Image (cartoon, rainbow, N blue to C red; front, side):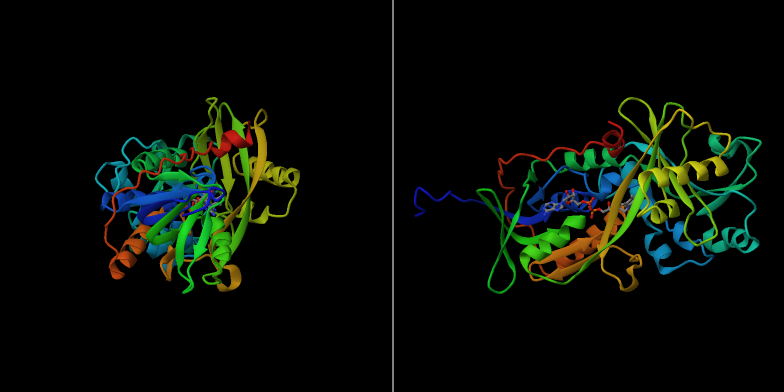
Length: 398
Ligand SMILES: Cc1cc2nc3c(=O)[nH]c(=O)nc-3n(C[C@H](O)[C@H](O)[C@H](O)COP(=O)(O)OP(=O)(O)OC[C@H]3O[C@@H](n4cnc5c(N)ncnc54)[C@H](O)[C@@H]3O)c2cc1C
């Protein structure tokens, strides 16, 4: 019997305990619940408040990884993702995402001048048919409908989602499985496996634990005393431009390197205005610049690329943010979603929002391989539920 001075531990037993409520954890949670597993997902802050809510929401089909004129393994691994997400949006996929807000049915690619002939040939090739289509005239996005625009525009078989709305829907699908735990403690058994996760007076015991805490996986692995898999961070400094009359723009701008010179997505703010969110090389090269210096560079890029768009009354700011991924030699981008089983834990990073379904496939396959079946009823956690993160455009422009 514990003495009256010791706090009583309330043990919650569940099939699967997921740590981290970004796209990876919430997607997997919804799939597991659908398959009859009992789950508890522990989020230390707000749902979607990590990288997911700061992402551009592009459901890539891999074209951005083919900008040097070849289809790489990265481009191929991700090629099926747009169709998979689309069928969820249509209510015919593995998760019902009907009513989730689609920001753009297509992402585009534009070259400000004439395209190098080898790239034009590659885009027109059989390998990319249906994935990259030249658009002209009335099919051009409105933002390019200006006599001063001399470049070429391609429509990609990729879509752009309102990520806060995706998170809202996945939180709905999570039912009563979400709990907030600001400082979850990893309790370790002598054999190195996880015994339980402590949240205040509560202990969660599960058949398997899944780490989907993004950048937070590093701290979880440290507190568990496990060194592998190691994590890498690839930093960005994004630029945000807010205005009442910004036209919608969802596109990569081609530059002179295999990476997009600029990637622009457009997001709704709570006050009815719109925010252009600028990534690509601008954000990679912006790391280490002062916000003022980066904003000056972004202004100059936009006035060179889209001089007919009046941005004089817009507000500008920047957002430093890290991409957290499994460590690779040379800090390159991993090609696919990543999942590794360590003792009774699955450690994972999707490496792309678009790859969350692929990560869930890997997790389910690993549970199957380990013969982990649904066994327990959903516990009555009676713990506070995490809130949805405020969209980043509303945090950055309060
Ligand atoms: C600027 C930017 C733009 C991007 N754009 C795109 C894009 O357009 N398309 C695309 O496919 N990918 C994009 N990505 C990549 C994509 O955002 C990430 O790969 C993906 O969101 C990672 O999801 P996640 O669930 O693993 O991590 P996160 O979204 O970071 O979620 C992790 C969660 O875990 C929680 N957490 C942390 N530590 C703990 C802990 N100890 N206990 C419990 N919870 C914890 C955090 O609070 C957070 O909510 C972008 C990334 C960035 C940075």
